[in-house]
Image (tube, rainbow, N blue to C red; front, side, top):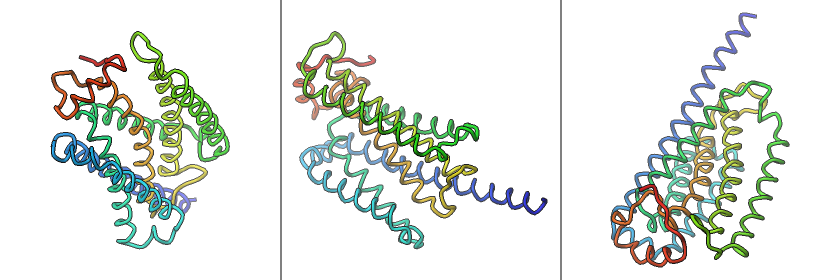
Length: 272
């Protein structure tokens, strides 16, 4: 009995160390992304460069997509010391660069505010997942999780098509009807991803039916970073079209033309 208890205590310490590594790396990826995105927003020559180089950002996304796919499914690569870390940095950096074309078209106040909101949501759900009792083990009921994700995706895709094909140009008092449909779409997708955040957190924290390998913290951090990205990508609709946290006098000259064209199509709202 004592030996079993000692083994369990040792396992808990190792698992906690693994979780610290995974969440610590996630924090590094997020900080790395924020620094570069803010830099793009604030330095006008760089902003203008990436406004014109959107195709390069698409290319980096496609490249990151396939490298990430390779990294997930080729397990041996994940355990080659040095190579695994370099691949993770490459994936993260390519995903950061892939957003430059969008970042160059928004204001830093909106970018930063939505970034903070998404990070808070991410870590709130990470924390909540650790508080769930054993009977709420998401790793045990993966089928239920994927069925829920399927229905979320089903509703989201229908709403997205409805938004673009039917209600795009209908006026509304505060937001266009198209924006309301996009909000519903965003909520569907975000809730689905946040559910997967909780699932991933439980596989990281351990003491569940399914757990990540104790030396796979690099993969854990990159998966959580992509969970964040999906939620954050969706906020660029609001950042670009409505700029809710940037008053008119704080807009950069580069966005004046865009603001003048979008303001006639969409009612402007912000917190100021």
